[in-house]
Length: 224
Image (tube, rainbow, N blue to C red; front, top):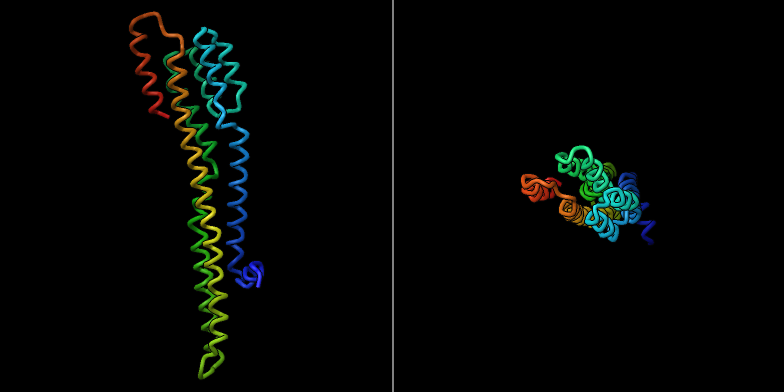
């Protein structure tokens, strides 16, 4: 008997498990394509931005940050935009835009965690219902002795849903862990990017502003 035939024998309880499998696959594929399109592992653009900032070329630095697909790019752009109007709001803007970029990367990833927890429970529910139907059927036959072959057949069919639920849950959990690790890695990259940008920004001429700059760097990195 093939795997497909086994899954068909699981009955109607397999339907929600099939749906969980399809949704988990769709989420994982979508996020992988999104991460690849956003070029999370490419950070060459940051060096060119920092070089422009050291040369006091703020417009050139902004244009280079705006050209990248990396999620940290919009954060840098927003910081440089606010720097022109409200230098005191650079920290708040970095925190706001950085949080939005993190939310975009984390969107739908939590669904994989839910599926990893729900699929085994759905499988267990199918097994319980299958066992109840089996024993109700045996009770209705009125046989003095139970046919062992009939009993075994009903039991393994009922257990199929539990096995299917676990087969969906394990890959879903692995996918969630992997995507979550990518998001955590980006969070560290974002913190480092903000610190390096703030350090490279042209400092104020007065001593008071020079003393505030290291504090701004530290607070902004902690806020993301």
